[in-house]
Image 1 (tube, helix red, strand yellow):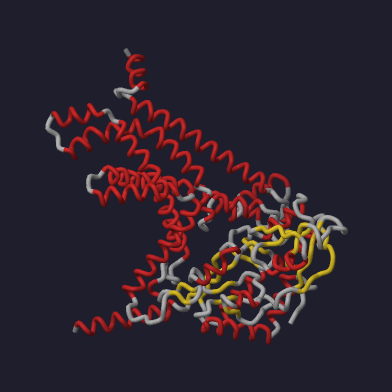
Image 2 (image 1 turned 180 degrees about the vertical axis):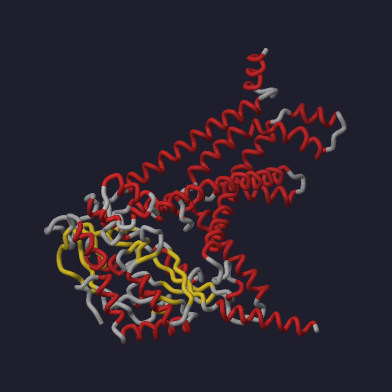
Length: 293
Length: 239
């Protein structure tokens, strides 16, 4: 990184540490914190969208749609997360490649499954083996985000479904008395009011999502856990910066990071809760009204 | 006119494909110094990095390196995530049933036990080894209790913190740890496997033959021996 770090074996003390902490590998480690934040930033809205669709499907009056919504939440909630995280990316990858294979190379006569090989024609491969490495990384990351969104979407669907049922029936009755259609009552009356009932469940999910991000490591994405383990392991003199087993310090760093992240989340969610309670016929809303009165 | 355009497009596509096949993805573990490891710049480095780059030059291939955990390294080769495994993998009959190997690029390697004391019990005690390696199979055969770890680094850590009496791994991998810490070699060296080789999908014999020829040319002109001496140490057996 710096010119004075050209030969690490000749420097020591704080200078050594400064060079060590700015090595190319450490830069990749710092960048991987961005990967985790990006995962959270994409997965949270995606899971919420899955959840909202699931909750609406469960409420549907068309039985096939209702059956689909119920099936989705029941299945995902009933299977251990880790199995889903391992299953979804592989299944999705093979399904996409198979569909591309069937459309792009219809003349291919050899079977796709050959013994233990899953071989599609080179043009159908996802991503193409000619693609630069960042395409491979992005594709792997996208599969991971999908797996996270599917799993957390099912839990969100259950929370939102419960929240929709918690909105006082009198509100909907009033809307109907004003002549609103079913859809209007849903979007104008029910949805804006349900969030306060959904928030405790959703904030729990958010916390669990934060804590589930190290599963990225399991999916082969080079996240902070991967780099912490890689950097912390004992290094012999074949490396430029030899050191004994320092994994405990790296994992301690991750611990502080996650604690900080959840603490910030708690503060933000607390404020959101206060805001959503405003004017609601709940205990919190009532307490706010009394405080200002 | 239309068929002319189509024909041109088809030609452009096939030309692109011919080029496409020249990009070869090399998969390695990146956690097995001095064979392969991630250096301080975050790049794959080591004996196999230098060897693989040289082989790609000789075979006129455009290669890129990717890393993958050891325990899923064969399944991901088979499903086409990369095209070659160059990861200190010993050639065994068991692996040959799933993948094809090019000729070995190191002579049959010596494995050794490391422990904290001379009298470490390697026959009936607890011995650590990496999952899915020939060393792990050997520990089971000796009758010692096998303690498996997903990466080689953890087997050494297990010996240090007393979880295991000894660890079994390639001697070339262990030598730097013995030289630079309080670990010592225990017991006799054991001869396992048929040398280290690069693995390919069974459906990809052309690529295998290209690498096979390149390895042969490196053996013939002595550059492979020079690489072994440089990375694996002067005591490592040569061709």
